[in-house]
Image (cartoon, rainbow, N blue to C red; front, side):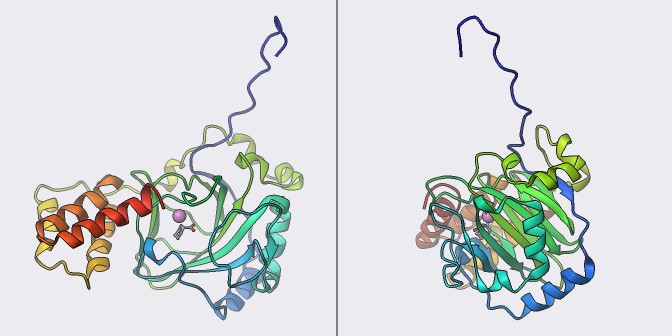
Length: 297
Ligand code: YCP
Ligand code: CO
């Protein structure tokens, strides 16, 4: 900056927090056609360490365009469409209308199966640079939940979301059919850089995208935690074993989605259960798991 000149006005604040960007007016019939086709795809179980139950995904865009490359990885240049991406004409069109695909690194379909939950985790820890994450729920219900930090919220059908996936987050399905989200990852510094000009012009809500937060209308209130409830969960120590490790963890995660626990309570309570079970190898497993999900990998 030249000495003596006034500083340039700060650019409009772009969201750093998870935020609903807008609602897309999706073509129900064309979307249903893509969803039907996608039901026949082969989904992979990469990232199973973050899941109790099943969260299965398939790549629509990635480094190689090869379906067998199922994990996020560092690479330079634009992503390539996979054979599955090319078989979903409607989603392909939506992606091209809304986003600058030059910076699109990964596009995935993710199916969270009934009764499944994600272990609170942070994404991109294994990558050199964080990416910008977008979610578009294309099949969901009132009984599907997401979380960020200690907030529980719902991403509804057709809503376009920016997710700060660097914060601890999770998801839960209490419904009876798969929750399907389109998940996109862009290599840009800020979410304001991912949209096409055409989309920005037609999307009035974008101008209201300021600080970035989960809109109150999407937030889910939970039950107050009652005296003795924590102790009742710690009593699961009496049944915890290597074989039901994931089941007991799922119970604590489900409690987090229904009662006012902090996200740190998930591994907090689960660790306490493991300690009270008197099985040091399980205590160590919980600590390793927590570190893998939230700290480093
Ligand atoms: C991802 N988050 O976006 C991770 C792994 C669960 C959701 C699986 O890759
Ligand atoms: Co994640």
